[in-house]
Length: 128
Image (tube, rainbow, N blue to C red):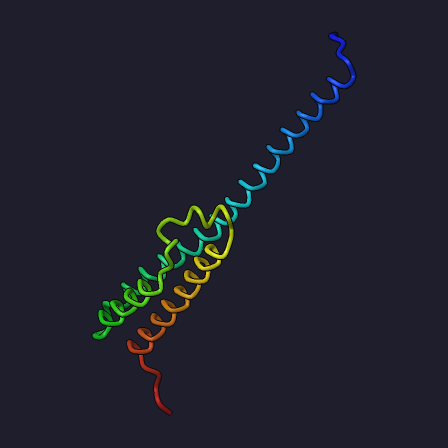
C-alpha cells in the first residue's frame, strides 16, 4: 500500500467527491429531461390520435371537410416556434416548454370540441 501525505489524500478524495457530485447532477438533469419529454410526447400522441379521429369523422358529414380544414388552419396559426424543434425547451424546462404544453393541451381541447360538433351534426338530438 502506497503511503501519501495526508493533504494529497484529502485533495484526491475531494476531487473524487466533486466528480461524483457532477455525475449525480448530470444524471438528475437527464432524468428531468426524460420526464419532460415523456409528458410532452404523450400529449402529442393524444393530439395525433384525436386529429386522426377528427379526420375520419369529418368524412361522414357534408361540412366535415370544411371543419377539418378550419381546425388544421387554427392549429397552425397558434403553433409555437419551438414545436418542430423542442429540444431546447425540454432541456431548460422554462417558459418555452410551458408554451408547448399549453399549445398541445389547448389543441387537444379544440379538436375534441370539433369532434363533438361533428357527432352532433351526424346525429342531432331529438327535440322534445
